[in-house]
Amino acid sequence: MKMNFPRINLHIHSNFSDGKNNIKQIVERALLTNLDFIAITDHFTDSWKEWVSKLKDWDKINEYLTEISICQNYVRDKKKKLAILKGIEIDLSSSEKFIKLIKPDKFDLILFEYLQNIEGIAFVKNIINFWRGTSKNIGNFPILGLAHFDPSYFIYENLDILMSFLKEFNIYFEFNPSYPNFYARKNQIFFDRLKETNIPVAIGCDSHSIKSLNNIEEPLEIICDYNLEDNLNILVKELENRFIFDIGNNSQEKT
Ligand SMILES: [Zn+2]
Image (cartoon, rainbow, N blue to C red; front, side, top):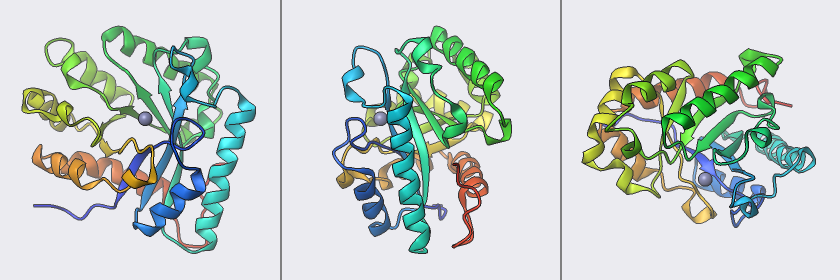
């Protein structure tokens, strides 16, 4: 049975990294296609592919966050029901020093990409614990997720370690239509464990153009196919608690 879920795409790139469109164009298309929750999640990296992103220092990051704020105000003034999250996608092959430049309180969502082994888990734990130590208001800590995570790195070993890590830090798994092979039956054990452990799951399309902003049907079908509707609901509840507001009274917005 397919439940009625809000329409969410929590993984979108703008021209602040390798996306084609500016944030305003993304928001206009999201309104047109009746999405309920979107996250702008541009790349943050100083790895070999650092050229993909313009977000190199706090001047640029502030410009990015301000543009998202302007769009949040625009949507609110139009009395539309679209929540726009301030996100960022952190490349875990970046240096630790660079990643620690991120001030988590400024964001609603932090995605990690390229988690591939237990050393990576230790690296992320270290960074989150550092952020928690510097965070002024821990209640304001962003939602955390794994971008296009490939389960096959963990199905043969360290699956227990991965699951307790996701549980302890409340990190979600993303269903992403750009990577259909990740959802192959050979990874069934991983999806069963997500279900058993109540790990939240999300939909993120990795949109680099407004054309793919609305590709949310296939990920939703896969979620239902693996019986992970309750896991998606965990995330939906979290989104609704944090970002649903009475129209005209958006009290949740980060400044
Ligand atoms: Zn991405």
